[in-house]
Image (cartoon, rainbow, N blue to C red; front, side, top):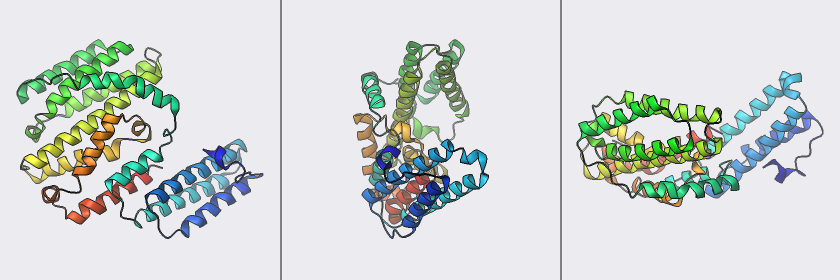
Length: 321
């Protein structure tokens, strides 16, 4: 990204680099308001300048030779982030705006190699939609889930075929689990979460050890996670529209699961969205602001649900930059 500003940011000394960063901060302080496109433009420019300044200082060994430069860079960087947070309050950003900003400002947005890898993996995930879930009760589904995770962990995953087999089988069980999520409000599920995290961690260890290519592990596991988050969110939306929440705690848990894709899908993962997953994300976006029942269920007024919550989600994203 820094290449685009090569002429504008032609530094001779570390002081030149820091002065340029300070100049950008001063410009941000004078920015009174933004809309979605302006915000995207500012984040991209911030990334570009920060990247250029940082690499110049590293190349010049400024961070090593003089801690003053490192402290000054960090101070300016934090101040710019503060100004970005301020700008989130100058426009009524929607859920759609939050998704657009995250997509357009992802460091992987224009990564052609990643896009090609996602296209190659897409048929695998599309095929999963045609597999029927288990028609069984909650107890049996949970038993299947735990048995599957124990066997997977015991056998290990040491090649791409085993990884894809795990993703495929897990997908069926997870969708079967979601069909009963309304019944899970008092069910202890920590062991399922921990076993799943352990298996995923072992897959990345296998990639580190060369048993699975890093490219395959990153792309397939990212697409798997995005798919699960969106499946979970849409299942909760269905329940909100068709079920009465049993308690405030269950309602709060549902709200968290519904908005989790906005929080947990990071810059890399958002670049792996397939057209189908993007459609599912748009469905979530379309459902959140229009439902009075959502606001009543979550004990939030309509204004907070439609305006203040997207603002908070955008602030949370800015804090990761």
